[in-house]
Image 1 (cartoon, one colour):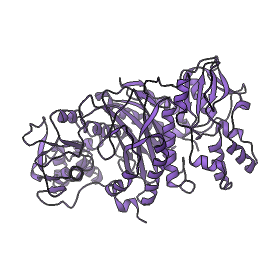
Image 2 (cartoon, helix red, strand yellow; image 1 turned 135 degrees about the vertical axis):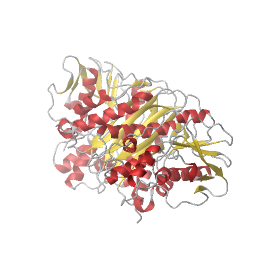
Image 3 (cartoon, each protein chain N blue to C red; image 1 turned 30 degrees about the horizontal axis):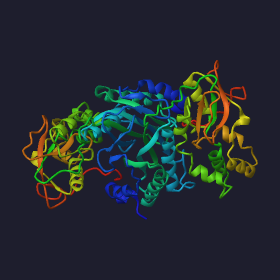
Image 4 (cartoon, rainbow over the protein chains, first blue to last red; image 1 turned 90 degrees about the horizontal axis):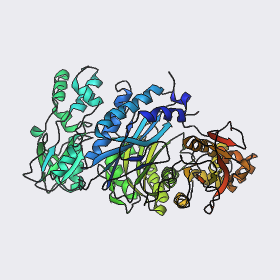
Length: 313
Length: 313
């Protein structure tokens, strides 16, 4: 095995760059001081980090799994605005003793996640570090559709989610318990598979507010509520639980609803629509927007466990 | 003192975001899944990382110094394309025991570096980590000026740099030696001050290839040479040495030329211009582009010490 420290930066880039996906939007791709992109409409831009030991573990995730997650969780942020994702900038810091093969596998995962959506990796940076730290900036374009923020949920609106929830959290619980090998939830934790394009469809159907559920339904609904200066009242019985979470719950002897309410990383969408709106296929109403209290309520009460804090223990 | 782990992500963002600089280009700033920007012309995008212990040390750099460097080294990448920088995405990972004041000081440094150039911080991410890792993606726009890559240097062109070199490397040498307190070179290492706009001016003056000198003149000239499939022949006697480097050399009893040739992080520009071109103010010819050998030569020979490798010891 060759390490990235032995190989050096320039030689590593020469191996890494050809594995990255292209995009038609790139007028100039990786390898210069900057990439150059054409943009149709306005630019939509979002960034997320993945830190080893906090957001992934190398004993659970292959390098390609990590690349997949890094790409997908950023692509979905663009979709969650109702915009079309086009390109990623990917920054990877890794210890000098990291196997070159790991870095190339990471590139393969980026490509596997991006290519079906026409998203390219147009640039980034490679650096040494004492732990693996990945940062991705995703770029998209609006094509004339007004972006849907999280700040315009209005009292009386329907609250809905784009897909059943809890599979990723259930997969994490199985891995933590060291059981459930081969179950679907583990696969969905390692490679989240949100339906890209659901956000654009929701925007075209008149969604008033939208965001992706990255830190858990209740926590993210609370953020939407505060941004919109409204209340989001969620009814637990309406929350669609992913069958893979239910299956994992049976294996672990616990209920799956808590994963659906507080587990993050499914990266489904949370959105509000005007009362009486015809929801897009696959969406489920989980509550209503209220005035008065500005925050999230579950079955009429303020929930005490909200979800994931990025600085928490 | 309060740590970021005690404060939690949402409360920290509430303190952090208001300190960030705005930009007129932002139709939607921080706080949503993504920011939305208008783009005049094509989009130019670049990314860089700063890792604690590799790119900065907290005993040398204040939090604001680190924020300044993170912003400036990315802004200059946009300028090095001949484009106009508009906005940054900033991702900060830090240990949970990091003082909240450090993170707020970091935001202040970002603002101090960005505001004079009308550059805003429009989004990003905060995460826990075991060491501080900063990633910045810089965005700019072309305003109809064709971007200048590093790949179009042509035999017969003049090779030039935008400013005297070596101050940052000299400052690092002083800090490493534990001497020279108060000398200008240290200040220029902690807060590089490239002239933003020099790249756009060079583009308008017909620069054929351009890049910023981030890893040392010889290493970066070698990259330009390989990208352009040409030779860059540098004449050491022509390389302008920054007076602050000369001063530091006197203090340390060494010559300053090596810093100018192999020291990175001044973030001046390296560019080629057609023979006979009238160089913009402040630029100095340091060599010529040749055919035959594809790489950098110094005084006619292949140099053995090139500069900084990001995975090196």
